[in-house]
Image (cartoon, rainbow, N blue to C red; front, top):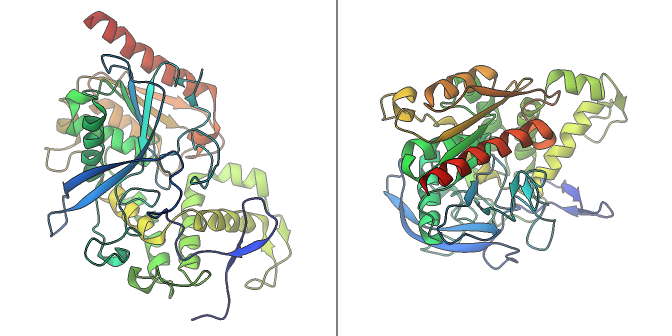
Length: 400
């Protein structure tokens, strides 16, 4: 084991502390606002055992109306979780990741809608995943945890809808991986979704996207502290943080745009560190910061499971292709692209929109930021979400 102990600054930036081997939420930790649903036996597409016993961690906001027509499901992105809205608090390592969009008086108005979000199957913030106890020995699943698909995740989410008494969501919406799950909902359960919102997403992952993911996965697996995925008993500071951090740095580069990084950092340099005594560029320091932040709230095995889920995403798999898979969906559809997104470019959204019978084309948002524009931009996305919800409400009123 290395003599070097990696450290991270605490949330208020006062004292350094070692990074735990995994920053996953574990049974016995403070639940925060999470609720938990025992899913029972859940079949999995590619698991040779056929499936697993699983639990889903979820949160809700607002009140479900009498006829259960006001339910909105918000699907989180790659490293997100169920904490869509709210403050950072005990049990929640970060504040709500979509506070700008979800809440009282906001586009997804929790005074009008019953909003639900769950941590995905295989996640690390409450739902059954690699850091959870294995049912046979109580030790973390680690390397034994199966690789799951977006379809598996959506089947788990459908069980949650059943539990909550929701026959059909008014809207399933999400950015990036969340948008891909919205698309999977439209193909897997078209009768249970009145509208979908896919933001910065795709109907099928491309070779270019898989290539970016390949380097991220390699960075984690080649970290000597990864130990083939069985690192949960490692002391703080001795987990696979270097590999996870490099993976995050690669990913974060694709989440932002070249012009934005150039404008913010240019070629500015600063003093070096132990690893780079010759000095580092400001943009390197920025990537280091995001690597450190992720290590304090995520898990390396979960990162690999999420990569696999996105890599295998193809809504047309086993359904005759993308167009055939989505042709049965009769609900409303919002497809949003960000003009500076170099990870999920406009062409991905155009193909998706063309395959959805009631989609009126791509809503193109301007942002200097890149893929992460869905997190930092305002009115364009706000207006689009309000408009799709208004269409749903008009449809419900006609049916009544």
